Length: 283
Image (spheres, rainbow, N blue to C red):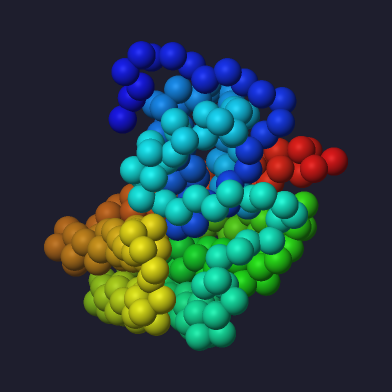
């Protein structure tokens, strides 16, 4: 979507802040920023934090209706922060919804540990990298549960700690994968494939508790994005296992490991960068 007159909305010193519901990672933040710019917001006047999931617009409130259609077209939910920093989304106050999120946390963190063990057992670096995705998703959802009602400052600090922790995990997988490149051994394709298929099943199980709590397109899109992105990584590992069995080579496993770990590290860095920026704005 683009503005017909190609005009740029004027900048204001008093920002508008909106909480974004349904975004998952830095890629989603970039998509939302592009949508705002297509509606006439100057490049420096829109920022979506991958750490706190808060969008800052430096435009006049009267111009917000001009931008809103482009934002809504992305499929995410946008909640205007009018006073304070506490979400008014009733879903977060629903005990059954919170229980569903706790199930998601336990499934992700639990299978992340299991898949990491499977990576060591089978000698698969791709499984270890995919396990990071489970651990990362679990940690992000866990933080979201703990941070309900927290101020922007404390959510940014928590995101910073989480980003650093996940970054170290990602670097550990990259380092071990480089070591495996120099000392190649072919992973056990059967075990590798079995754990990857198990990951697909767990992803489906993690989505099911959330389905009944979807309350509109944005939440449905969030459920779809989470399951789709995770499934892509799982399928990549399954395919790598098949190629390892077919070619008798460790390279498919190593390539997938580098790809998944690289994406993971990029997301980790974006969380750290945005958390630092959020903290500087609250000082």
